[in-house]
Every structure is written in C-alpha cells, then in structure tokens.
Length: 424
Image 1 (cartoon, rainbow, N blue to C red):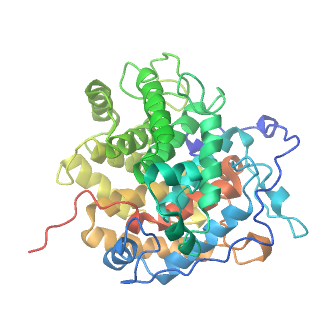
Image 2 (cartoon, one colour):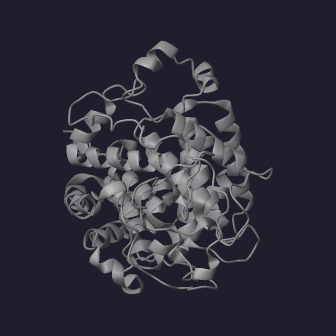
C-alpha cells in the first residue's frame, strides 16, 4: 500500500502466515491472455461498447500498454487465494512446481492490495459474474457465456469483492484495526464504490454507503484523516488523498457525501498545499512538515477532486513540478531524497491525465519508457512488476507493485479527464 508515508517497518512487524487458503484454481489451467484491443478497435465489454479502444487511441495508450495490462491481470489471477483475497506475504504459495516469485510484502496490507487488484480488474471491464449479480443487473446469461473469452476473470472479481465484504465490520470499516487500517479502508471503499458504479448491485451499494459513513465519522477536526479513527488532531495528506479518491468514487456512483465533509477537506488542503504547489505531509507527529514530489501530486489530485481549476496558481505550479520529475526507477534507491515510487507514478499520472494537452503527452512518453520495461518476462513472475528497491517495496511487495502499475496503465480509459480541452 501507500505506506511510503509512514515510518520504516521492522522485519518483526511481518505477521506470521498460517494455513493459507486453497488456490482459486487459476494455476496451469488459468484463462489465456485476452486479445488486447488496439486503437480504434471495439471494447471487450458489452457494457461500454467501443469506449476502451477509442480512449486508448485518443489519450495515448497502445497495444504495448494493453499487452502489459493483460499480462499483469493474468499474473494477479494466478496468485489469488481461494477466499478471494491476495496475500502480500504468501502469494508465492501459488507458484506450484515452479520457481517461486520473489518480492514478499507485509500481510498488514492484504485488504488494501486486494482492493487495488479489484480496481485493476474492474478498469479492464472484468465485472463480477455471480447469478445474483446477473439477475440484479439484468444481464443476459447467454450473452455472458458468449463474452467469456473477453472477460475471463468474472469469478476472480466476484470472489475478491466477497473477500472485502467479509472484512467490513458493523461500523463500515474495512480490514483489521491495526496501525495502518485507514489506508486499507480508504482503498477498499474506493474499490467497492467502483464496483457499485459498474454493477449497481444492492450489496455493493450498502457496503459503500456504510464505508463512506465510517470515513465521514473518522475525519479529523482539521479536515484531513490520520492513521487511526481516534481524534488526534493529526492530518495526514497521504491518507487524505486516498480518502478523497474513495469519496469521489462514491459521488460518481450517485451516493451522498455530506457537504460539510468536503468543505472541511478543502480547508485542510488550503493549509496543506503551499502557494508554490508543495504538499505538506502532516501537521503533527511523525514527519510533520515534510515535503516531497509525491505530496505535490497528492495535493494536486485532491484539489482537482474538490473543484480546483488547472488555471489556479497552485495547480499550475504543482503540475509544472510534476512534469519536471518524471518516473525514474534508479531514483527509487534514494527514496528519502527523491520520493520516487510507484505510488508517485500513479498519482502523478492521474494528475496530468486530467490536464491533457502537451503536459500529458510528454508525461505519457516518460511513463511508458519507465513502466513497460520493468514488467517481468521471467518464469512465473512474467507479467508482474518487482517491488521498489527500498522499504516501500518491502511493505507492499510484488502484488502491490503489479496492481498499482496495471492501474497506472489503465488510466487512458478508466475515466474521462476532468479538464478535457474543447475542440474548436
């Protein structure tokens, strides 16, 4: 997860893994990689005909990015547990009779990385396919059967969403109440909101409404969110960024978010983002006052979600700084100085995609040059991405790295840009 904003974890913080769930059944008999649409081809989903291919062509995606997405999704499917989740620390148990994939993370983040994987599958139009979902969304079972080749991961998505539902408590919170659970909760809320948007299924709606209620109730008085639901007075920009992505997904699904919650978040961002576009990580406690390019991106994207226009001074300066700091794998070795990470690459990509124009075109070139060559082509690791070469990689591991890079490469068609230039 995006734990790069927290203290470095000790090895002792890794939780012991006992009796992992049986595999989901996607080992040697896993589905073939679906054919990937190139620019101008039809979408593989019946729900959004033509949209995906058109968006790829218009916004700079291509066969190489779609091939990487397909390989990444297949790797994720092959390493999913039987209960529907993904294990950051024990995913290699699915490398049966093969050289185990490297890159274990911390099991603290299993709920969050499962949610990221769900988002990656949903973005590629792999929707849950249980009989309940089919009946509620009035999908034609015969049409579904004919569409199996282009959507082979329906069962994976259904199981993953069930995993998240089973880890939501009566207060609406997702995941165990641990040190970083508000990260897990925010990303899981984001994923459930996207699932409801795509499926309009009642159980996903009820889950999202409950999760948003928990987020609203755990907002700090200063307008941001902290690691914990307790009132601490600490406002963390990184956690707040994920919470606002979740709230934005809920609003996009037509669900209600209190105006007061958004107004308090906006006031927090007014303080957390400087006139030069700098994002200040936190106001109190651990690493208070720290700045870095990752927080520049989080601050800018959060402000966009709350209505800031790209013409505003803070937004312009932040975008300029991001464009001057393109993805750089080598710089990840010195995270404390550069703050380069997959998390930064993902958030910065979302920022510049919103703006479009020459800034987006330039960033897209930098992005593809950095991300595509990093995807593994070796053995059972094929299709995955290596963890970052620092303590961030130790936290999320290979599952997190793969899910977030797939999401980054799906930016072209996940959503329309907020500030798409008008055609003359």
